[in-house]
Length: 296
Image (cartoon, rainbow, N blue to C red; front, top):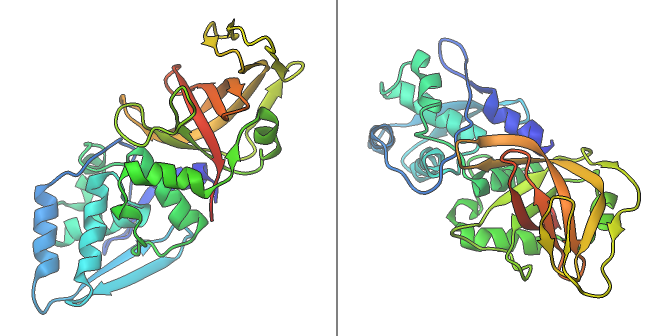
């Protein structure tokens, strides 16, 4: 399963209900921990002593998975219900939340779509990439996190980059065109930004690399500053990418964009640090990023 195929699980999410499935779209950006009257009411239902609660979800691989939670396993369901409010919900966790919302009487089936588009639940950048790697690539059970959700962005982004192999040249990048690569924003020295302003993580869609033009690079051996073809100054040891190199990135990002895919353009690369400058397709801005293979 590719990142774009995984994103479509959110965009075309089917929620199994007693009276038939309801399709919703989950594509809003959401970061941080958020409370909700729905979460409080659902938690009350989950915490009822002596009661069990059953949810049925369609997994990302197409099977219906039914789970019954009793007093010994309710803590697992509590975590499942919280994740969509924290920007970390998997497609199955969102289904479980919406089912419980109907079961506890907070929402009617015809209100689920409006609720999902309201911004009360959603994904942040780590939420999308982490869920894809943990559940689509590593095939971890949808309600077992193995610590994924407990890791803050400051821990997870660098750890995710360090788990894979660093990509430092455009040729290396091109040789891996059939794979997905993780990319994270970095500072001018090539160090990945762990959290806070400027921190962001994304993932490439495999087999979307397009190269048009002549030789790959214009070298600058004298160490002088130069201007790349987008009019930006680049360091002396960087190499300007002369040909047009583009590729598709899937990400959950702010600024009213949410969960999107767009075509990025590679502008320049420092082959010593592996620092790439790329032009975003979703916002038309530029980012300094590092690339790494996906671990798992």
